[in-house]
Length: 124
Image (cartoon, rainbow, N blue to C red; front, side, top):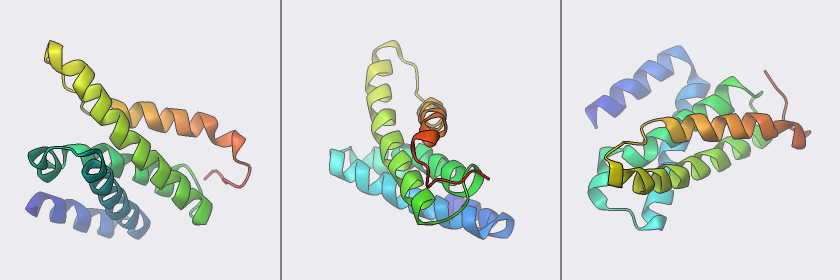
């Protein structure tokens, strides 16, 4: 909890938009994890929300101009990233390999490359 507060304050100092997107991404990851029936220790550790936070910041505060469309796009990516993290974690568990931030990288690349299909998204 303390680490999360420190990160949120640091993001706030750096960029209010990044801070808000991080908080929205964290909430989204939490809600998706609960909805998927994830184990409480995994939810409490932030494992299922970490990639969602990164995706929300990347797509809501870095790659696209902030507006309702980019916020919705970023939150959709946060949802997708949480599901992909859970799937990759389960798939990699038998070989003892963690998913880490690979789901974030994969989903953000996919969403950035797919962005021309959404003409209302404006690139930074």
